[in-house]
Amino acid sequence: MNCIKIETTDLNLYYGNYHALKAVTMDIRADAVTALIGPSGCGKSTFLKTINRMNDLIQGVRITGRVCLDGEEIYAPGVDVTTLRRRVGMVFQQPNPFPMSIYDNIAYGPRVHGEKNKNRLDEIVERSLRRAAIWEETKDRLKKPAPGLSGGQQQRLCIARALAVEPEVLLLDEPTSALDPVSSLRIEELLLQLKKSYTIVIVTHNMQQAVRISDDTAFFLAGTVVEWGRTGQFFSRPRDRKTMDYIAGRYG
Amino acid sequence: MPRKIKDAVAYMVIYLAAFYSVLLLAGIIVYVFAKGFPVFDLPFFTTVSSVVKGTVGIAGNILNTVYIVVLTLLAAVPAGVGAAVWLNEYATPGRGVRLIEFATETLAGIPSIVFGLFGMMFFGTTLGFGYSILTGSLTLSLMILPLITRNTQEALRAVPDSYRNGAIGMGAGKWHMIRTILLPSAMPGIVTGILLAVGRIVGESAALLFTAGSGYLLPEAGSGFVSKIMESGGTLTIQMYLSLARAEYDTAFGIAAVLLCIVLAFNLLIKILTRNKFFAG
Figure 1 (cartoon, rainbow over the protein chains, first blue to last red):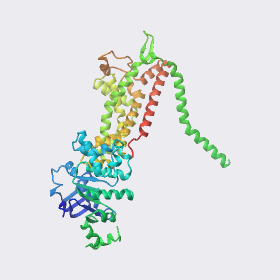
Figure 2 (cartoon, each protein chain N blue to C red; figure 1 turned 180 degrees about the vertical axis):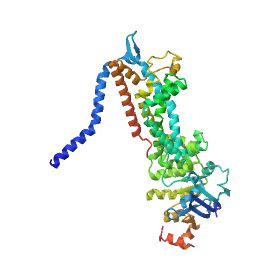
Figure 3 (tube, chains in turn green, red; figure 1 turned 90 degrees about the horizontal axis):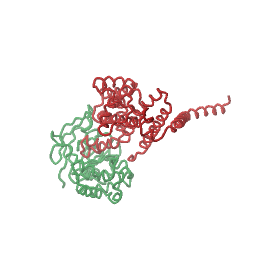
Figure 4 (cartoon, rainbow over the protein chains, first blue to last red; figure 1 turned 90 degrees about the vertical axis):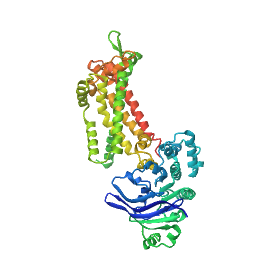
C-alpha cells in the first residue's frame, strides 16, 4: 500500500468566468502511475497543471481549495514555485527540446537550480539519460543539437531533462499522442520502470494505455472527477453510469 | 488578336517586369564599379584629402563611419531589444502595448531629415554636444530604434511557446528563461535587424549632415581616438555628397563603389544568417 503523495480537496479553478475545475477531491499515491482520462476539454490537463502551478502563467486564473504535496499546501503564500517545480517535473504533449545540444538540454534544470560543477553535471547528464533509456542512442552525440533527434527520442530526452533535477513527481500531459506506436510503447515501458522511484501522473486519451500502465485511474468530465480508483476495478466494475458509458466508447 | 499571341505577349511583359529589378541592379553595379575602381589605390584608403600634400583619400570617413555605426548600435540595440522583450514577454497585452507599437511604427515612417532637425536642436544645442559624432550617433539611434524593436519582436514571436513552458516548468525564473532560451533562439532575427540598421546608418545622409557634420580628418594618436567622439565627423555617404557638390566626380564614384561593396556584403550576410537556421528542428 503506497502512501498518499498528492491530495486535492475541493479544488476549483476558473479561467475568468469559466469554471474549469469543479470541486475536485482526489488522492494520488506515491510511487504509482495515476492516469487521468476523459474527453477533450474535460479539465484533466488543467488539473495536471495545477500540481506544479503552471496555471500561474495564464492570465485571469483563480483557484480555490487545497492542493497538498506531502501534506503541504502548494498554493499557500510563501511557497517557492522554483522549488515546487524542481520537486514536480513536467513533460508536455509535443516534445519540446530546447534549441541547444543534448547535453545542455539535460543540464538546463540543474543549472537553473545552481549546479555549476562540470564533473557533477557530466554525472547528472549520464544518469538522467540512462534512466530515460536514451543513453545508448545519445552518448556519442551529446554535443549535437537536440532538435535533430527523432520524435520518440526527443520525448525520452524531455523525460530525461525532467529527471535531471531529481523530482519526486513526474507530470506527463499526453506524452505519446504525438508519437508513433513503437515510440509510444518505449515510453510506456520507461514509465513502468520509473514508477518504482517516482510518483507519475499521466493525462492520456488512450484508454488501453491507461489500462497498460496505470495503477489508479481518474475519469474527468466537464470539470468534475466522476470517479477515481484502482485501475483494475475502475475498468472492470465502474461505479458510475457515465464512466461505464465512456469506457464502453459510447461518447467522448 | 489570337489567344496564343496574347499569351505570349503577356508572358514577355511579365518576364521583363520580373527581370527589370535584376537588370537595374546589375546596371548600377557595373556602372558604379567601372567608374569607381580606377580611383582605388592605396592612398585612397589610407590618407585623407589634403591640398598641401596633394592626396585624395577617405581614411577619415571610413573611420567616422565605423565610429558612428558602433556608437549608434551601442545606444540603440540595448534599448530596442529591451523594449521588444518587455512588449512581448512582460507587458499585459492591451491599449498600452498597442499605443507603443503604433508609436514605433510611426517613428519608422518619419523622414530622416526630421530626425536630423530634432537631433541638431536637442542633442546638439540643448544638451550641448554640438556638431559631433556623438550627436550624429544619438540621432541615428532614434531613427533605427523601430527597426531593431520590430525585428526583435518578430523573432521573439517566432519562438514556440513550448520552449517557454519547458523552461518555466523546470523551475526557471522568467528572466533566466529569456536569457537562456528566448534570446538565443531569437538571435538570427535580432542580428538581421541589427544588420538592416547598419545598412540604414551607412546610407544615411540627411540626418547626419546637420548633426555629425563633415569632418574628415584622422584623429591624433592616443587620446584623440576618444575625444574624436565629440568632434565633427562625416561618414562615407556625407563625403560622397560633398564630393558631388564640389564636382569631384572621381572621388564620388570611388566612395560609391566602396558603399556598394559594404551594402552587398551586408545583404549577403543577412541572407546567410536568415537561411542558416541551425537549431530549427
